[in-house]
Image (cartoon, rainbow, N blue to C red; front, side, top):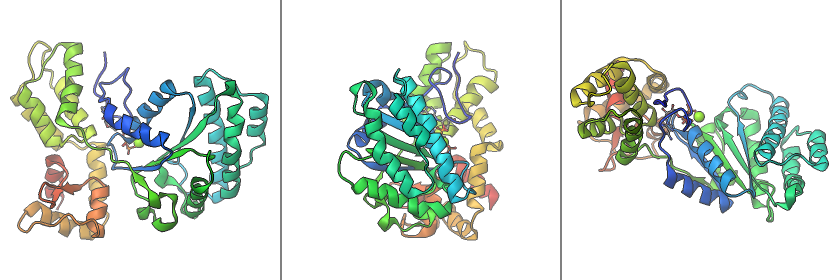
Length: 360
Ligand SMILES: Nc1ncnc2c1ncn2[C@@H]1O[C@H](COP(=O)(O)OP(=O)(O)OP(=O)(O)O)[C@@H](O)[C@H]1O
Ligand SMILES: [Mg+2]
């Protein structure tokens, strides 16, 4: 039996999942068009799950794309050389893995190329990517277009960031077919927040991908997967309240559903009603989970956050949602605030609002 997943990435064989089909189709189109995409969103909004689903779709649909997935999470404190050496090893491992998925094995030429590869800086990295497509081309005569996807990009060592982006820009601006057809950079902090001049990055023409919270329909479809499997249904008010109180934040939606279905011991033949939801909601407000830990860490980062958040919470004077204001921009990037229907700042969801009031 599947369950609601709350510990990182979710898998369709183990968890109930929102397929995000439309968003995936949009994402794949942009990859096919050769865009260089950034996907920056707060913690636990489903970034990793999303691009993993998307990669599976295009691996199954179109063998001509060769997605290489990397993760920079561990790199923050590495020297530039150690960073590029690890980058080198990880890329070679990924190439072998993707070949296996495609049921191909490395040709002698490719194997030798990978053995001989020494990526030690941004220039050797660029040269590697310039040669890679022609090395991959030998496989069954299929022309592969390399797609580079980097998760936790903010983990890149500061000393490398600028050179790394310059090389991506160099590749982006080179003649077609490019060594890297499309890039997707995934992270929590945007490139500007990484202290980098946006104007010379390849992402100044950047294609920002927005991964929205779950809509009411998506929450309905998630919960109905449980109902179909277990036979236990939810009163429709429960579903609307769950969506409203979490504002569709992916982790909070799953955590609320998990409390309702696993922790309140409601027998399976009993419909889940609003009083059950009230109990689950109190529990959700009282508990500390990783999502709330992230929220508290973020709002404690800067003394200026408090004043601004209290002004938003008190609603005495509205605060226009102006992203030129650095504090507003940062709080938005951390997923703490959002724009309401009147273009004013609003706390992202009632659960965060509760914790912010408690905190200050
Ligand atoms: N497609 C989905 N269907 C259902 N739940 C999801 C989905 N995507 C994400 N979630 C929920 O969000 C949580 C976090 O997912 P994931 O690890 O993919 O997010 P993330 O943005 O990469 O997080 P982090 O910033 O911590 O790396 C999951 O544990 C699950 O509760
Ligand atoms: Mg992730």
